[in-house]
Amino acid sequence: MPDIAIENTNEIAVRRSLGLQVLSVAVKTLIGIVSVGFIYHEIFYKQGIAEIQVLASKVFDNYLDIAILSLVILMMLLNWTLESLKWKFLINKIEEISVFRSLRAIFSGTSISVFTPNRIGDFAARVFYLDNSDRFKAVFITLVGSISQLVVTILIGLLAISIYAMTMYPATIEPVMGYVLFGVLSLSTALTVACYYNVSAITDWGKRVFRSFTFF
Image (cartoon, rainbow, N blue to C red; front, side):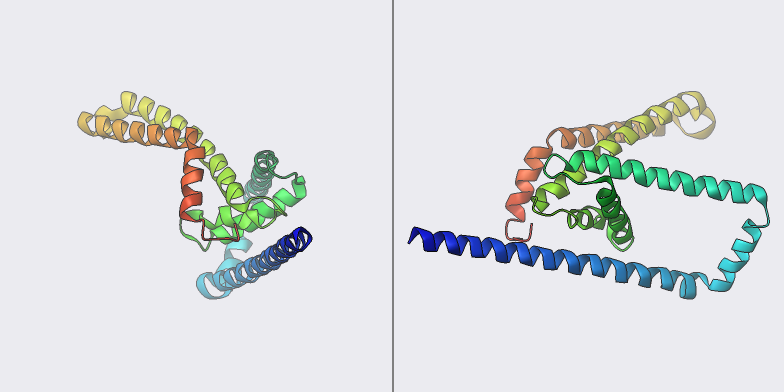
């Protein structure tokens, strides 16, 4: 009887692993099809190929514009590379992945985030590049990375707005509005930091809410 139970458990595990692999391939294929369709729609229906050709001809007639465009492309590639290194560092806590694999996950997340509200698809798309890890935990690890980046952005932005308000507000906004703005930003920062340092509790709560989704 114990042997039969072990065999049944192994069979369930194999089926579950196979199901996850099929789901992963299906999601990746769907991401590719939707991305190509979106780009096609944007070029040939929304923007118009003729308008794009006119803009391209203007850009490539000016060496300064070419230099700026090249710099933007290089910075974009650098940003994606840094993002892939950051995600690799975070996700290595639960599964070792290569930089190239992390970069593929970033590209998929960026593609699917275009079609989802508030870029929430970015978190879900990345985890399908993992093999055997807890996908729910991977989503929240990715969320923690985004929150930490958001915390830094908010803190620096709050500091910049405070400096601007102290030096320029007599000519731009009323003092009361300045205090209200500062209070709202401070409260937002406090809540963001509180969520960041209590992410484990949020993860446990999320697991209880979504425990019926077995594919995580």
